[in-house]
Image 1 (cartoon, rainbow, N blue to C red):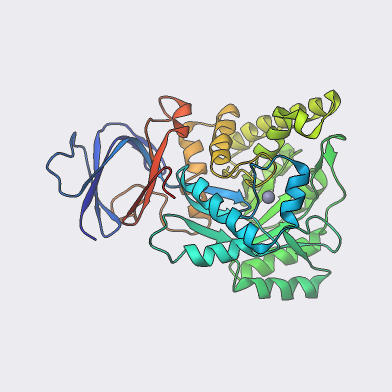
Image 2: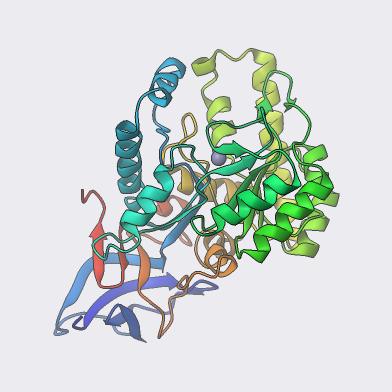
Length: 399
Ligand SMILES: [Zn+2]
């Protein structure tokens, strides 16, 4: 590709804020060939006038379900959608991709679906140079027979089954998703049921997945489940409600990441009328969220790597927008802006050994473009202009 140029007033390079600009990025063959402190694009051939106040590496959504429609709030309609057909799920997945790109997301880790829409979309998108987004797919997750969740996972009964299933997934799934606990019972303010896999089983899962080169990410909330999984070599704890300090210490020691997914619980708290929650349940929801904010703050202080993921597709958790919400929750929890941006750019890519996530000479062009800097005003995270990957620029609203 011929040279092009992008101008920005300031940028986040994947580690720190560069605010001595304006800067001109020279792009050659889809790679950042140069970064210079220049004020104007005038006279540069192929200059892309994107009105960019701020650039960051393309955003990463670490926990989404592409086939689910987060914007559908009605429980009956959600159930009807799940009972519909592949075509409808695939169409939802395509629409969700557009929403994600409209929020500067260039990499999504799908956290499981039983119809394989995640893998189908990945296979269509990842080799397509005309779409500036890439997908990692867990395909189907693992669960114990009869346990949560039939929507996202298939059943494995014992050690032989675990070995065989992981070997089978290894060729097709980028990551291994495991369901260790059920969902939260908001009315009781607790996690439903006991952990699915015991310590020995979980150790086997972690060892087998590692042998096949798949990072393990684990749906888990509640002390009982967290006691098991934080002693195993996994990539990340997903959700992690009812976290305690000793779990965080174990995670910091093993460099296990935490993807706290505030959004689904926050939606329930913010819209109690949708499910008809009682005042008592509303109190539970607030308590759960406040404790979660508190423990994310503690996690940062203890050195646990935070990664941003929203659980997009859950009720009220809309693809794209919800990732930005998660970054705002990280701010509420007291995270510094460098850390917040790293959690949704460089850190997950580094952990998953994916190229990019850095704005530096020699790096592939993979950027989110904003009309304002979040270092000036957090709300500017919502002012996305577009994204660019390789030689392709996509502005918000492009079909
Ligand atoms: Zn999920």
